[in-house]
Image 1 (cartoon, rainbow, N blue to C red):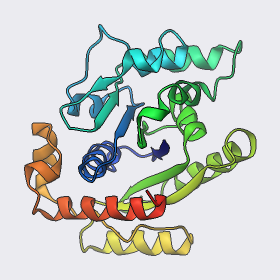
Image 2 (cartoon, rainbow, N blue to C red; image 1 turned 60 degrees about the vertical axis):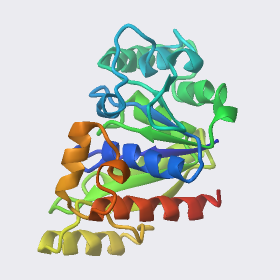
Image 3 (cartoon, rainbow, N blue to C red; image 1 turned 120 degrees about the vertical axis):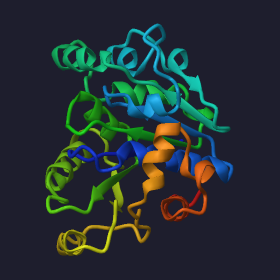
Length: 253
């Protein structure tokens, strides 16, 4: 199983939208995809209809109370599974931080290893902060994708992510690599041009695929449908299809 962490310290940049639509695109070409929701807001979990406080969740995996197989949900999208989140992640993050009886940073990696043989790709959707869930996601990942929206503060927090990746490579996960920065909500504006110029100045890998601003994104999210099913000819649906092809080329799947 190849594991990809999707992270940015800013909210509203399209992490969850990217996780959901990329899962749909990768599954559509024959890959089995596991989506792991690590955000207490649980937007990805809600998208897949998996919010249920009566069943195991990622919070239980991090605290060691349940195994990944107990939390796994089969979604309505063929080939896509979900490890769901809920607000209990807030307490779980604090509990993990205070628990020094076992390694704090590699709990998710150990949990995913138990079910790795069943999946081709795992997409780890992170919250907009570097909590224990995010740290665990980076420790478990082979690759990192950083969605960046095109506003005047587009690259805020990016250096912090890169610094954290370097520390995690040094101490916990030497295979961790940045696959690329993904430009989202793109429009032909001065802010968008400045954002692209800033990324170029940082000499970071940037995906050729750019996710254009599109009203269908919000509509599809409201209906809990991937763009390829809701409106496959819209610009954002085409862009996510291009992104999936680019990701697969990088993975050589």
